Image (cartoon, rainbow, N blue to C red):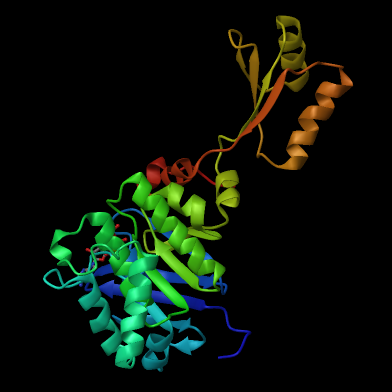
Length: 316
Ligand SMILES: Nc1ncnc2c1ncn2[C@@H]1O[C@H](COP(=O)(O)OP(=O)(O)OP(=O)(O)O)[C@@H](O)[C@H]1O
Ligand SMILES: [Mg+2]
């Protein structure tokens, strides 16, 4: 493939199961060497999207290219470049981690010796060397998930699909998984992941998309998404009530907390709106003790964008 292709390019992706429309025209582009996070409520169609992009099931319509290859016309070329870590573990519980990895190396037609070396390297890299020869049935959830990802890496994929890679992991295991993902991206790998943990998307993803009712209802960087929903504000704290009173008069529409000597000024969190507030205060020579910018977190974004449309917050 040539350099001009994005790692993943999807337009007009549709998929229904009988009458049930799961994906109703999804467009997305993932640049090479970036992490793209797909968010959505249970049943939104995240796994369906991952399965279509990784050639496991077919779409009803859409132009879907992975690594420049059409998933329908050239599924083998797509498969040769990708790795998939499914939502549910696909390792053989009766075998050891090493045996599982060797099986995978065979599937990728690696020469025996190379396969053994690859398995050993991955076991070390994923902190599984000690338990390498014990049956996977005895592993913890975190070890199993690490093995899942190690299995995906046997074939040296450069586009990786991770369907809820850290569901059920404790905070430490989650962080260690994040480190692994960052390491892969630093090596130039492209990752599309789905997650229920918005902090995970916030931590890892260059771009985030929210899937709801079959379409992407929002897409952007974490900061862009946070700015799109109401709730961003600047918080100002004053030394005394005089400052508080004057500022409240000058700034107009503010929420006031007399006990904390503070004001909440609605703001989109942008530099321009911050400057407007500061200029207004400066003009009146009002002293501010503390200024902080508060943007909604991704949980707010998610709740505002998905679910019951009656409760949906209108985005600008
Ligand atoms: N083989 C199938 N036959 C019929 N319906 C299906 C099939 N696979 C998925 N669905 C339906 O498609 C919808 C999307 O499912 P999908 O597994 O993609 O959701 P998801 O976003 O991954 O959810 P979760 O967060 O629970 O993993 C669901 O309503 C599901 O019931
Ligand atoms: Mg799923």
